Length: 367
Image (cartoon, rainbow, N blue to C red):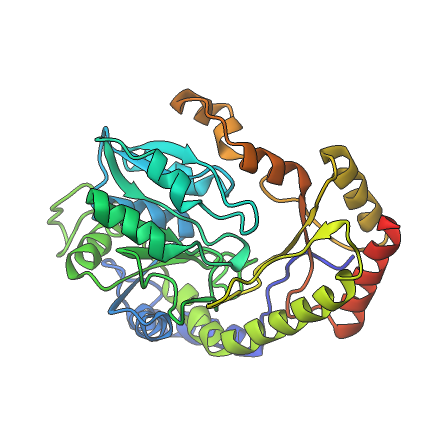
């Protein structure tokens, strides 16, 4: 089976972990050991940000950042429903209410105009997602936020390597939140990062990750244990160096797959709007006029051929039992996308020959 994603771990990462374990310094009570500090400096440079705060998961990054920008009980946060549940989960953990807005039909990202329609006096922040590795349309989102005095937290969990109008994730946000889960373009196994240019947001995020402390035994706010270990950070330092090659290989595979699949008029292929570069976390196609049953039959056939295609977010968050309590909404573009999209393997472990096999196999199924 060609898996949909596969972490690219080499001997360098193994030796980095061994070195930390032998040192005996495996974590820091305030979350800022030497490996974490080194990783944060490198990630801040990569992201073009003043601050990078390493935490133990992408969900922790979202929760900490939302608290840091001021989300609290009774506040509304506007976000897409077509995303992983952690995006909405973090809003609830911060005490806020998720307000789901519809997506753009071509990019699958939060529609700025739909976000604007959902702003109320209770709205505190906008939470766009860079889905599949394509940036949300951040400039108009920022304009909506500025018009209404809102914060912007960008869910950049899948964004490693993308650019938007020549800038990295977070350039139009108060904070960007990254995941370092095993499937991502780079990994620390589990892990996350918050990047920001705002000194206050950075300070509060650092306090959030370590029980609300600036100094030991002196909590100044309600916090959590969101520290990244020294071993995770050591892996991250190595992975960050490899990231450009990972993204380059993903891009090459995506281009090859597009060349093959462009022969079919039954598929809507992923877009890359002018002024933006995809990170190609996932190569997601759409069965343009197909049904959910037809999409699912294709997936079954692909699996039988040894191709690990997957359909992500088939149950949008607003339809999940727990999140229905926040108010049912009509999200037609979200519903259609959930029934028609599926993703194909293009990670760095996929060879040129396998990309051709994936594309030609799918074409035959569509005839």
